[in-house]
Length: 237
Ligand code: URA
Ligand code: SF4
Image (cartoon, rainbow, N blue to C red; front, side, top):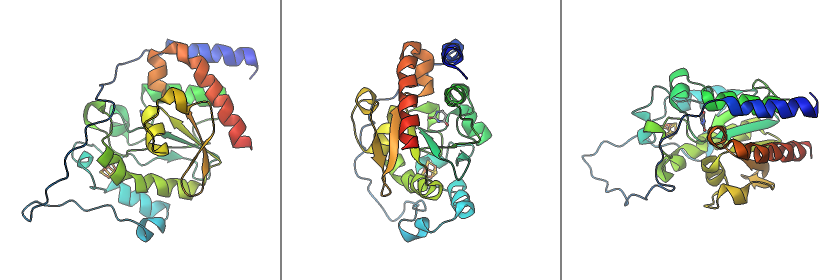
């Protein structure tokens, strides 16, 4: 694909209609420490440490699909594990499943997912080549922002996915994914444009806008394109 075609393609990304997502507070207020009483039924906690670190793909997927470690297991239709090439060079990490993902059990299959596919296509990748997952595996009601305790409970699953894929690059799409992966409150504008690293393996990580955001802020697509080019460079290093 030559530059002209790419340009046209990126232009075409602008025609997709955007549907406004529910907005919650930027950072959900921390709830007070839960008071644990004997009478309260407790959820099965996510196991930590060795147990998850040793899981293979099948076991990991089974555990995620039956996970009840946070309240999001109640409203979900199903947990959305992740999809794609388990030996991928690129791992795409989003925020959480939306309505369509919750229904189909696959990440990024709704409108934002179509734009993500276009973004990948523009840099010569397709969905089958990369591995796609989310910070949260279950859909927050009305697409509200993930709560810190939900992210905390869900994190070991993603960490294990990253450890199994061993990607050359993680592309964090959107503020929520970027802030949670990098453990920062910095705005996305300050996180994009440079190489970060994630986790114990120091996996190179690049941040870009969420496709849902790009659908409503088409002027930012130029910057997203720059991010993708940076990601290509980093992945090739
Ligand atoms: N938005 C996300 O962040 N992830 C999805 O899977 C779908 C929409
Ligand atoms: Fe478990 Fe994550 Fe779903 Fe919460 S969001 S129930 S931690 S899989």
